[in-house]
Length: 336
Image (cartoon, rainbow, N blue to C red; front, side):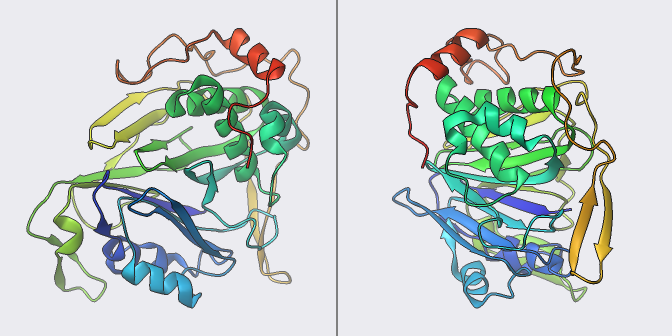
C-alpha cells in the first residue's frame, strides 16, 4: 500500500527532518516497497502552498532529499506511492494541491466514471489518471458547496462508499489553518500522535542507539501517519470511520463520522509484475454497476448533524438543495 504522513503545528514553523528522515519508520525507509513516486507538500509562512514530487522511490530525487533535510513549515503532507496499475508519472504522484488544500490518499476505489460525474466541473482539470485525484476532486466540490472542509470530506466519502467499490478511503487534507485525517473503512490503519513542547524527542534509532532530536520537539505539533513512525507509546490508532481535526490553535477534535461498511467492499488482488516492475491490481467485480436499486451499508449523510462538536459547522443547506444549487450556478471557486 501507499504510505502518507501529515505534520501540523498551526502557524508555528518546525523542522520536518526528524519525521521525514530520522524517525525509525519514516518515509525514506519505505522506498523499496513504495517505488512509484514520492512527494512533499507544504505551506510557507505567508501561506503559499508548494509541492515537490518525483515519480521515483522516496528520496532518490536529490531535490526531495534536500527538502527533507531543510524544510520548515507548520503544515506539511508527504506521500510515498505504490501504484495499483496507473502509470509511474509526475502527474500521478501525491500529494495533490488544489485551492490551498494539500491532499493524500491511501487505498483504492473503482467506478471512476461515476466519481467523475459526481465531481462535475471540479473534474475538468485532471492532470493524471489516478482514483485518488478523482476522490480529491469530489471532496473539493463538496467542501466548496458546504463552505466547510470536514463536512465536504464526509459527504464525499459517504457518496463514494454508497456508489462504487471501495478498498480504502484513508486520507489526510491540510490547509494553512487546519489538518483533517480520516480512516475509512477498517482495511488500512491510520495513526496519530500529539507531541507537546519539551526538551527533545527520545526514540530508538535505526542503529539501535537512543537519540534526542530537539528541534521538532520545541513546538507543539500533531503527526498523522499510516503506521507509527517511532517507538513513542502515545501513538493512537484512529478507529474505522473516525475523523481527526486540528485547527490553527492546535485544538484537537475527534469523532466517528462514518459507520457501517462500503456498499461494495472491493477486494484487491495484488501481484508484482516482474516484466513491468509495477504493481498490478484487479478487482474481481469488474466495472461498477449502476447505482439504481443498490442498498448502501453506509448511513445517509446528514448535513444538520455536527460531526465533531459545535465548532464544526454543518452544511448550511439540506443535501438536495446543496446539490441543486451546485448544478444551477457557476462554481464559487472555479476549478484550478
